[in-house]
Image (cartoon, rainbow, N blue to C red; front, side):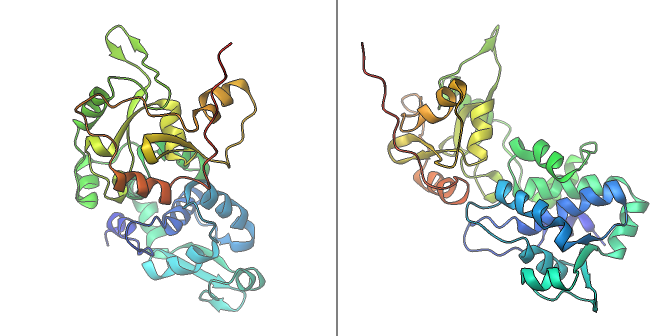
Length: 303
């Protein structure tokens, strides 16, 4: 049985390009626990808060319950649930999962395969990350679920599962279009002739059919790339920066680097280069950006 392909093909609720990473997050969490504890079952009542935090931070903008993947992951053949009454999940109700002492864990065949082939865990985790999240979030998501990163899986295996190849030229095309400046803050640091701390961000994530095209890219500094992928920042009508009302930061740095960006026009792209396409901008606003945007920040009056 190809467990890597099974991880890549988890059945998720879908409607267009709506994000529903509930099952991948639970499976990543379960793999992290297996890596640390091997055979321990995850009692729903004990892990509910952990799963809530993962969904709040890495899930879709709207609130959802971890009871959904705890029950439905069973149908993918990688997860089993038992209760005080015996085998089988009592359903997606939080009360039922708690009251029956529901506990889930990886199915016996998968646990045996992970013991026989330790590298399998890392390959499954990488495919789950590639298929559901942008690269800027991979390391911190591994830390959040307690996964110790394994050596990179074979590239041919990752591509055979993903069935799409990234265009290695995208980064250079996007950075050139924005003249090596962060589209949000204008940062343009270099060491000699080499830019440092600048990255090409996908507006619509590659994992959700976002193309490797300039009109789906932004040149962003490392900080703003991370905040963009976490839904703190977005791009609104008129190519102006959106800042989530849910973001809280009182320090001068937080104000200058985040809240005062609200309503500011993007820096670039240069004339002749394609701006962010409306369809990609709309996807990010609906699927990644958190909450409502703050009002445009008023620039201080000149003295």
